Length: 303
Image 1 (cartoon, one colour):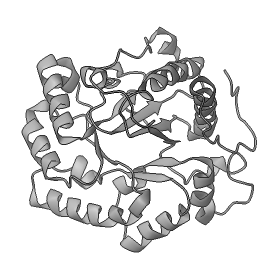
Image 2: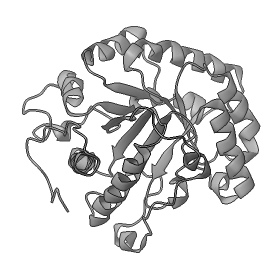
Image 3: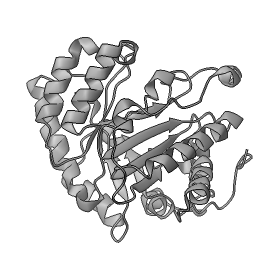
Image 4: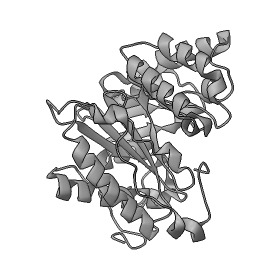
């Protein structure tokens, strides 16, 4: 992922410490039931995972089967590039049968990046997208709407109107990237207020070069975290340790689901860092989450 990427030589100079919880997060009531955690990556079609978490000689048609055996959720980036037929979605969902696995489909770029969110085509594409992904059934997680860096607060009325028209029975999460969403306190507060009113999640993106996107506001029952690592650099492990502490505190809050999806410049390292995350969560939070079934490791797994 290129967004927020900086030169590796500068990583030791970045303040990666997570900010304190935002206002809406602080206002959450104590948990009645502990939130469910869903962890994984953004794609299952990674050939470099053959011999790592996919057995040797695994066919590409079997990648999803083995992905589901290693993780319990996915930030589904493939839906960003096309709207899939109902039969394809049902086929993917069938592979998750008998598990609590969640697919989190990303809105098509024809809506999020190449429309103003108010055109007839944008709404037609939205209807087609929703009619497609609803076929995930019980395996449908939050839908992920990622706006481009060009989509600034001057277009917020179109955004708020669009979000208001989305079905209320679906979990929706939003990632904004334009710096002005975070640089102006009035605009920032308005954004999170509207998202909270609509029960739309504010995606928390933890990336090296855009620390403002790690805003720590929980605005809906489904919290969505995107962690962008740096190839198992030592700071990756320090950042994960910080997240484990934060998630431990959030497990005591009235949140339904916490989704945490890993990104790496080289996705070869995604299973290793996710393994570290899950092991630390299990140890620090007294959980029993399943770790990835690593066949072999690349790099220094534990820092």
